[in-house]
Length: 285
Image (tube, rainbow, N blue to C red; front, side, top):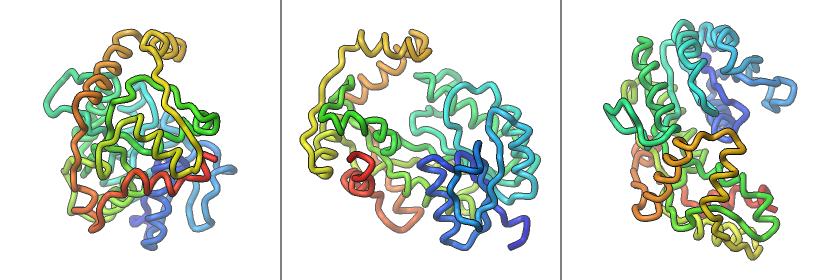
């Protein structure tokens, strides 16, 4: 395949990135994967594995040389290296597909919480870069619940805001939409809203996981003061914690939206939460 047809995938060893690589390969596309540790990446031989990291923009620039499109997944805050990373990508490629957040509010300088503030800032950088772009504004990833695996094994999931509902998206659906945006012009300049099939509360998520895994698992509400201290110990500042609490409090009284974008783009409905759990049963056992 010609050099210009190579597609760069960042975050390639994560849940979403690995799915993007897998689905691009299934379509016969040439893939270059940016990874921190190539020796443990575990990709098939046809994937060109390149060592690099988003905290090292120079490595991103090298990885982006000659690619036709890049899938950008920014794994965590802060935004400090983002301008240099976007500049490096824009020099090497003509298209960026960025996995953003459904919580970004259009034309607002100040977003409601630090995560959406981050995504809005990165979107603006990409828009100004001069490349063709597509933003995948996704609701929460179902794969984030893999953080519960040890608690599920113990039979108790301890979280705050048990009534908070989210329309969790299967990583395979995010990847399927990303592949369509990476390999054609139909979605250039669009902000695609992605969601799962239906809103579901955290309490119900735990019940379904237990049911499908075949284990009794209960939800235990954690006091907000306890959660605040935990988040402080992880480096969160109080204003950011307040923003996250406000977002979850809203989700406890108002369902997240459901969009049909997955079906409109891929031709098949978004996978349900029980389908996601069934795909990850072994992760919880």
